[in-house]
Image 1: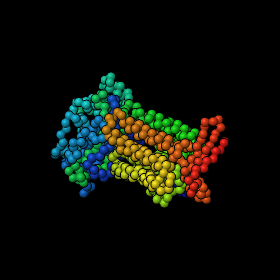
Image 2 (image 1 turned 135 degrees about the vertical axis):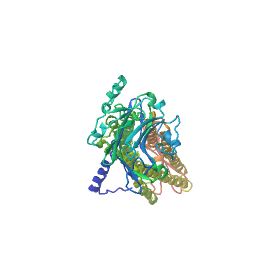
Image 3 (image 1 turned 90 degrees about the vertical axis):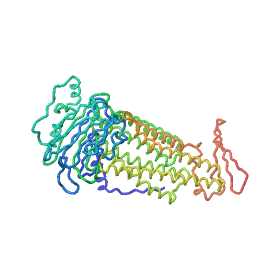
Image 4 (image 1 turned 120 degrees about the vertical axis):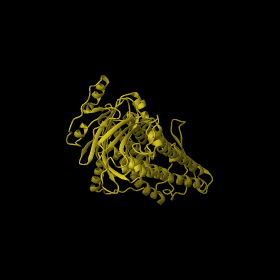
Length: 564
């Protein structure tokens, strides 16, 4: 296999780096910008809260208008707009949407009924109109139960601090605080400038140039309040007529558990990534030592596998550092984020290249790639790069963004397509060895290699099934406290796959699978067959080597004893 050096366009590199910088978001400080959006509901964020967690929701520049005319939305227009903050056991589907897909909770007609299993906070936006006063009504639904103990605040001063509005006509003032409330405000000093709201009270809604602004904070004070919370925006007129109104607004959400910006289920994620990075790094050094001590049995593909393990360790290390800074600051550092995406991109491409090379038997069985195998490379590598780019965009996009759903489908389809492609050369190798075993008189050697590729085929299938399907199902069903186990299973499964693959194709003379075919190199020597076997005799102090070879056209077996 020949490699060529491709000249790199410097301008292209700058463009790629610029795209990475543009994609970087603020970690757990979410900002979702909606322009002329006609979706009837949008998932803005999901987060796992423990007792003492705080969610801040800030909406700026809100205005809605008819899809057929630029007329502003007002209180007399049929339908409402607002937010629901839904509590559930995990992040699969919010409890409310399991039973109500076509009815808006703020709707005037056919309002859905909420049972005792539903726990949510309602934030209804009512702009001013001929008979309406601009206001934001905040309710807990149902009152009491698992939502009891949640304190809600109106925080208009946050709009000034974020420079969304210039000034306020009157400042919100807090009330006398109890001991528990003083402890709460000690953890969240920003609540000092907020005013507490009772259930059904109105938060301050500010109007500037026909656009509306408000900010609320939600503090979860009891153990019963812990759970997976999802923030949804609702455009109620579009539940009945999907294109009735369009809305434009900017949503800023900050989620915290005390001083930790990670969800309660992600609190161990940095530790998991650091541990897995150490395991892969240690494995890389062990693999390098094996290659150093078995020089004559080492092929180029073994060094490719070594580079792959180092890249995997570097990718996990950068990912762990990213999570560490998100936990402390709410956002990753740009330098570490770029390093993670670069190592992840290289690791993903090299992983599929390595699997395809092993599947074709390159270096282990033959020194060349057929035209069909080269076409597999031409197809797999660009698609794998596309899959990794889709993954990066998903990581750096907000859940409610239009492109999030599109790139999610692209990533899933392209990733499964690439996984299917790497199985094709393995099937070709198994079929080739099966046919060769019955035609060229070397059944024993080819059958051994065929068993190898069957084993490797099953190994790859199990790896794909576990890391793509089982882990995804587990992620949808695991309780919100244990979402970090998804990372443990995915990276742990990958580590086991790397270990088994390395052990199967380890560079050792006793491994009959790695006897390289030399028929093309030995065409001029008709007296020696490819299935010659070298046997080491360690019974005596000296090394006695018995060379057994079968000459063509001669049934007698010639033996030569060599003393080393």
